[in-house]
Image (tube, rainbow, N blue to C red):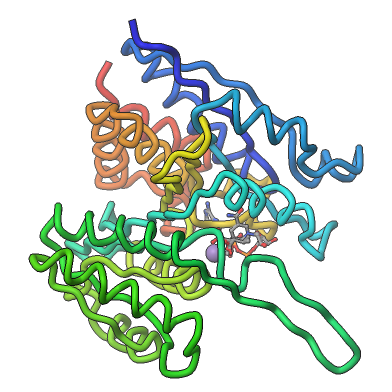
Length: 343
Ligand code: NAD
Ligand code: IPM
Ligand code: MN
């Protein structure tokens, strides 16, 4: 019998717990089909931080790192903690200290509100660039340091080239090497290097500013877009707009070199959405599709595709939350999706 997969649940803040509540029955469904899953819920987020002063204690981090295989994450961010320090200490730390270099953000046409037949995939570097949290504020001057290292850049681009080769899709690297000569110069060198290793992949670099214009005019010719942490963050939200917005965009982050037991984290692209939190208005599709990405990563292809098909069918049947022009609550949408899962 397979060893159970241990999944840590971190709902986080705002709509994080609302959308997480619709992913949990999907885990139960996989369990009913014979997948062995153990879960444990962690309280980290704004409420916990305000009540105890704790963000992500070291002991809990080590427990997550060494005692779990995967993390299912909702979202962090709370207006009561406006400097976002708890979000850095929780989410950015998990991404960085678990070395989850590859952030995969696929944009498919899941249903209404999406461009028909769209199939774009963003590979975002997830641990470095200006998100490395090194900088300073001095009187009249502020610095955010952007650090790029060759191992992380290579891991991210390797994953993007591999995917482009497997799926026979064109690959575009978004960069600003015309200005960011050092950091993006490194990206260009590694890109050229990998391009010669993958002669079958149609790969080009493009200045990110020109890329954004071309993307908005017509996303269809783009297959896979690779980018550093900052550009990838922006590009992936733009791409979410093509498929119906923040509520439907999934993501999966992983460490291809698997330095620790816990080497994968699934989370929707959206944040804690304080403007709609606590009202049952959040769309759970991004969270449920992130769960499907996690199933696929664990080798559970039948469950992954059944979940994706259930989302498509629910949307096609007219089930929609308000962000897509419908009237269903988060819970009702979760139920509508699960109605289309095979028993
Ligand atoms: P956001 O993604 O939370 O919200 C942007 C817009 O999208 C809002 O109008 C919101 O109502 C809408 N939206 C988001 N998720 C939705 C859903 N599931 N269904 C329907 N509509 C949805 O981005 P923001 O407003 O810029 O940030 C809010 C907070 O979240 C901030 O503290 C930010 O730092 C944090 N944040 C966290 C993550 C994360 O945890 N990965 C990602 C992005 C932002
Ligand atoms: C995302 C978010 C985060 C990021 C923030 C909340 C740190 O925008 O997951 O895309 O920029 O990575
Ligand atoms: Mn973002």
